[in-house]
Length: 453
Ligand code: PHE
Image (cartoon, rainbow, N blue to C red):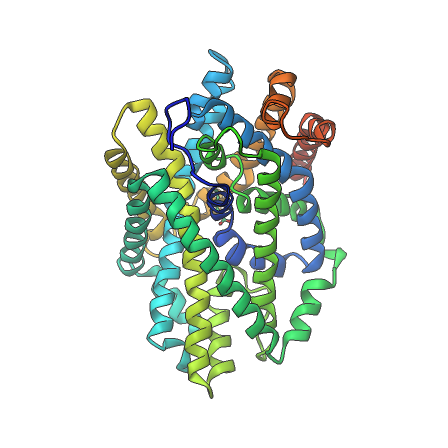
């Protein structure tokens, strides 16, 4: 289906919501969120996170949707169209650049999930062994993680090369329902484990003594990362929305699904983690790759079939989540290459996959042979993640808000968000107030605090 702008669009409302939710729901929900919760005081972090989603995430997402749908173009062209000859274009460039950067390291972690899925199907988590050592030797291996990452990139590439409707929309409609079903099954299984009560208490009882400025920054970085904000992904997807897509409603649906999945992932992981002795919830990034295999082994040793099922489903969940997110990162860059360089989709997708993988090699090796190579104490992987989620994304969010709140014509913003007045948006003033004052102020404040601290 093509609209009057002669550009391909998503064909259904469900396709729109599932594709955008597919971008948002990813490793950030299932892997990064529980890790951050574990490290930052459980429920206190969740409360701050919810506040960040409502006050910052939703308005930024609405703004991205409006920029993308109004221009029907890739992110860089979108900013150029709305502000010809102005510096605002830099935000578009930063968005595409950061999508490329994130895809390079996202692919590596996604490759790990693929490897762990294979291991769980082989029954490796039913053996008694040192999972921490297994994980370290796997990630520091110069070849194996790379092979899995290449395989993962190939899967992403094949979807993107098929295009918006028969690639992104079609696969999102298959993978997202599967993913949600798996989550429900895993939550039910996890609630039946002996440590369910302790795990839930950890998740639901706030420890405010752990809340510092840097925890707040982490919560905001996590919200940006988890909602796929400020890197052109949602802006690019919105450029495929039709003129009757309800932007505000879609943004609320996507934020709700994303937050739901993040919290449910906590409901899956912590009851399981607290069900075995001597395992801590604040294990850091190793939580799902070291702690969980250990949990699978102890909890299901006597019923191996459950072990296969639980661990297999869990890593399949991670893989599906990673794939739908990687698709949006890839599309953000590919759409730019297609439209600005005039390259056909197949070749553009190929260019992006190969160049991203080249950068990914550096990230991958930073867990092994290049682990001693650090910048400001961070490995290449750490540096990419820090620059992306703690600097470029929040600053990008700030610029997007200033752009829609102060630069764009208020009437045009209103018309776009209400589909030319055909749908109501009662909270328009609240939205405007948030993007004009609250979000820029919050981001600036947290940054200054971080700098002074
Ligand atoms: N939101 C995704 C996640 O939660 C990651 C992502 C970031 C995807 C940015 C696209 C763009 O894992």
